[in-house]
Image 1: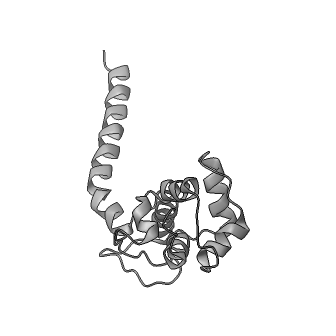
Image 2: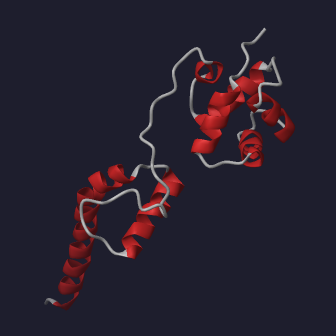
Length: 147
C-alpha cells in the first residue's frame, strides 16, 4: 500500500504556485500522467482520502517537480525564498526603476518562476548581451556605408 499524500503539503505547494484545484488537475492531465479529478484533489488536501494510487503520487510529484517523498512527508520540501506579490510593495529594489521595469520583473517572475533577486543578479549579463548585439548592428551599418 502506498503512503498517503499529506494534504497540507499538497495544498501549500499548490497555493505557492497560485493554482486552483482545477488548474492542478489540468496540469496532471496535460503532463499525460493520470486523470485526477478536482474532487479527488480536494479530498486529498482535506485529509479525507487515505490511500492514493502510485500513479497519482508520481503525477503530482512530477507536476510540482519534487520527489514523491516530499508529498508523503518522507523528505523535506526545498525551502524557497517567498516572492511577495508584485502589487504589495513589500519588495524594494536596490536601485530606482520606473513602473515599466517593475512590470517586466513581475512578468518574468510569474512566467518563469524566477525570484526577483535572481533577475537583478542576471541584469549585468543581460545588459552586456544587449549592448554587444546593438554594437554589432551598428558595425554592420557602418560597413555598409564604408568603401
